[in-house]
Image 1 (cartoon, rainbow, N blue to C red):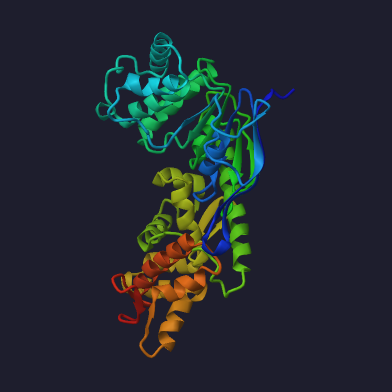
Image 2 (cartoon, rainbow, N blue to C red; image 1 turned 180 degrees about the horizontal axis):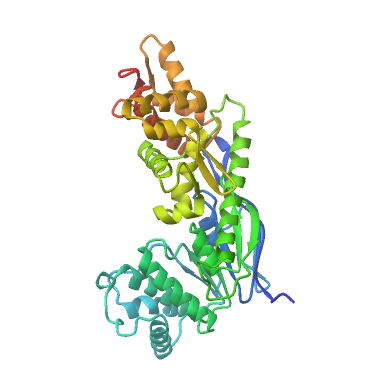
Length: 432
């Protein structure tokens, strides 16, 4: 029998107004339920609205449509019993550890003796006993994040929302804090009944969560739910653990491929495709890593991510850009260099530029469009605004600017065109 629902999120939609009366849709028809005793992970790339969803759940932001119900009551503002731990430590530097932790209790209007007692207990619970009088500047990153946890736990919340709480920490510190949190959770020492964790780290999601919801991007939707039926403590080397990590990589790459395929059908000669902020050096680095003897042109994405110490938001955009340029293929959680990708790895810089130039002209409509406009104009120049205005017919201003930034870097490497930032002008000043 399922445990009682702590939280029920129904058909959440969140849109922000854009100039001209249009809107930017960030979340669309999101539904989730959090039950007592669960850690539910929200896994997806930047732009999938996960942090926005946490703010809506906590009552810090209102949805455009849909509802959030906490213990049977509608959430229409900051909800007592729901606390949040942020990615940034968000501590007041002029307050001591004890004073930072006491803040939430002071807002509740509790007696000073009760405030001090509960704050000291939370500090002790999270492993900071002895640091009560220290200021944030005297603490390491891991200790500062422990203060963030203590500040959230001191109000004895039923639900703890965690927005990438370990991502700002180094690998060893994050692992230590993650392990300590899980031990306290499993042993029942934490005064919470349910957790929602936002993460970009697939292994972290499998390590900590009972269920993982995979989000699409632009807008954010729940596209898959994966149950993690592994006993704690979980072993990363366990074949079942590895299989779940592989499954999530496969699901995420498959869903992303579907998204990209749909975008290619947008009218406008492919100009509706948003280009990721991936540098040519990152692409070359991944190609070289795949071409090395350890992989011989093909790798399992989870294994590659672990070897290169990359997370989803770092690895996937580079892999997908190589796939878009037909320098690699991504399928079933694996990445494999194509014939041209292997040639790129083997050749010196000038030949690499030629290969990259042909790929841009063939598979990136925006790059081909810019070059064609420059070729056709007598001055062989065109302003940034000319292309930004076109792109904004298909995407937000922010996405248009990001796509142009990306294509400028790629075009420069390929020597397809030049760009002067001061005059905001494209030109054939240094054509191939």
